[in-house]
Picture 1: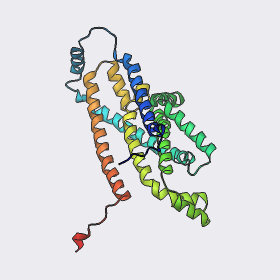
Picture 2: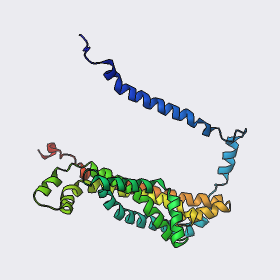
Picture 3: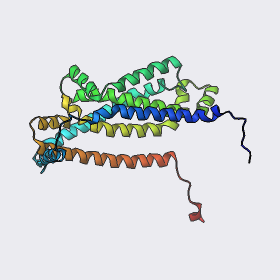
Picture 4: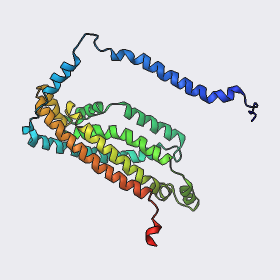
Amino acid sequence: MNRDLSTSPQSLLRPLSVLHLLGIIIIMAVFYSLPVLQGSGREMDYTTQITRFLGHFFPPDFSVIPEAMSALNETFQIAVMATLFSVCLSLPLGIAGSKNISPPWLVRFTRMALNLIRTIPGLIWALLGVSLVGANPLAGVIGLTFYSTGYLGKFFCDSIESVPLDTAKSLKALGADSIQSFQWGIWPQTKIHFLSHTLWMFEYNIRSASIIGYVGAGGIGVQLHTFQEYYAWSKFSAVLILLLGLVIILDSLGEKVRQTIKQKADPKPQNTDSLQ
């Protein structure tokens, strides 16, 4: 069978050249980053060091459970309120940052704002909250609200942009305004994704709320920071076990909810054989 010689070698190699260039960049980045693996350069018995360090964590001191449960409850409350407020802020930002329904100038401005929010680490946002309202759980809510808004806003933008606009355009042609076309043409197709992203953000905020306590923003992190300062590693490990239990429970519940959402979004056809 004769090969088609009408295609130039340049057109055949163009897609491969992009992949080759990307591979070269990745390899160069890896070699450029190798110095961070050198450590201090001193001869050290790493096995003995890590064994000695982990030995301080056992056995866990569960006498701290009563006060830890109270702090864990506060962590849960911080995550709930931060997720709620971030959803309220992210929904209009998601609409404003969607290329398929918003003007280009508004999309650029909104995307830049979301990028800026995500660039600032959660601990910095928590420090900002502490500087505003002092060292208390409200500072944690403020910090996680801003941090979560950066991510949820991006997720909501992507969800809206992935939706076909046929229904919304048809409603517009029939005389519906922008709010009505979004409510009936776009929202029914995106609400499942919005709920899934919100659940993921809530689970993430539970973990983050345990860290921002290191800067005085409330939650279980305050106890972790105190135990770490006084080298009370057995109490530290007990708190970590409680936190791990909460994360496992929430992860299991979240997975069940996501499976339910997925089934509603893409229901399986009914087996007609059983009806015969």
